Length: 431
Ligand code: UDX
Image 1 (tube, protein in one colour):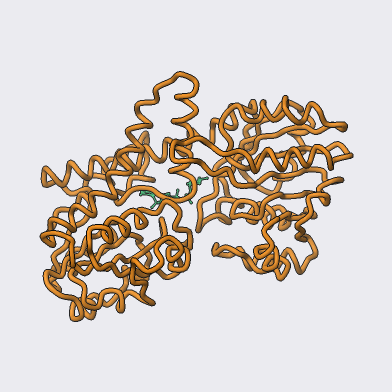
Image 2 (cartoon, rainbow, N blue to C red; image 1 turned 180 degrees about the vertical axis):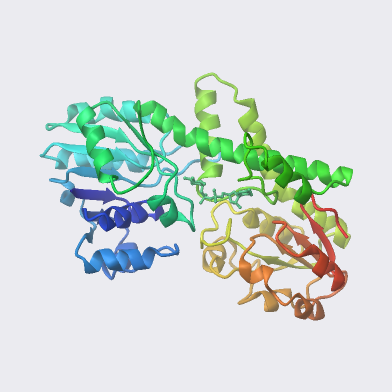
């Protein structure tokens, strides 16, 4: 099939490369010239494991091309929309990029096609798009909602081995065609209404975020009562009705999806007169969780002004260079504004984090340099590089009280205690 994918961000590029790997002829459209330059050289502008290889393979087989011109979309059997849908702090989702693209396509398309929405849009958006744009099209354009469930760092795994593929649409032939493009993927293909498909994405992310905030609250109570979340969470997760995934206590969720989608669902609920109390609490708990780390450092160091602190990990999770909504951003900013001398390091996220802070933070090349001379280390991201550090060397270069706040419960508490660190985790009793 001839497929155009519009927007070569993280979801778009994975989608384009994934579709090309099934033998479809894919055209990727990207308006940002510096991104396009890299793509033209078949180089991924984002860090995602395996993506460079997949892109190069598709290019070598002649299955993928890139352009800045939307006109190339005309004549495609399917057009995927994967442009950004950022949200404001209130949760209002900005659909201007989606609307701009569709408005342009309506004038460009001369042959019947299927418009597949992969960008995350609030429930009800698809119906609006059909009414506002597609019904006015000169040729037949059928609309399909096909949300993505790609985790950063594991996006290719999620693309090739998804738990399910959700297809929301009205026209049976279009639904069948979208099913066909995924025929090489062995997963349930769930057909439903457009608004339901849009809701599946929001409900899934809201539920996963709820699990995280829930276990973080339990961890906080463990802290107060002397229980250990490492003993509690696995035992809770063994109940098949609950499941063990997303029960890792820590500094809370970040990234480009959970914060945006939880706030987005809350906003759309409020807009329709519904008070989604549970979701509001999930969002609030997540914010408080990162403040707790600052509070703990304040308590353990007897204040923050003039204290030297190393923050290890800037990305919102390991395996990505993405720092969007990472707890580290709030933590760094709070520590610096309280007068602490803050050093930070990350194997892949340094450049992206640097854009937010300029001179306020000392960015270091590696963890050893980062820990030199500090009184406390905060682990923000559980990169294997940090877990496997030689903590004995770290200890020699640090200053008293040698405090480690393990914001991801990823470090070996016993070993660190033996080495003479003062250690606290999230819901893990301090030594
Ligand atoms: C998420 C969804 O998983 C994916 O399906 C969706 O389409 C996009 O959003 P992603 O943002 O890449 O993917 O990250 P994910 O691996 O789900 O983790 C999100 C955040 O939750 C991270 O900050 C992670 O550290 C945190 N997390 C996750 C926890 O704090 N505890 C857990 O148990 C699991």
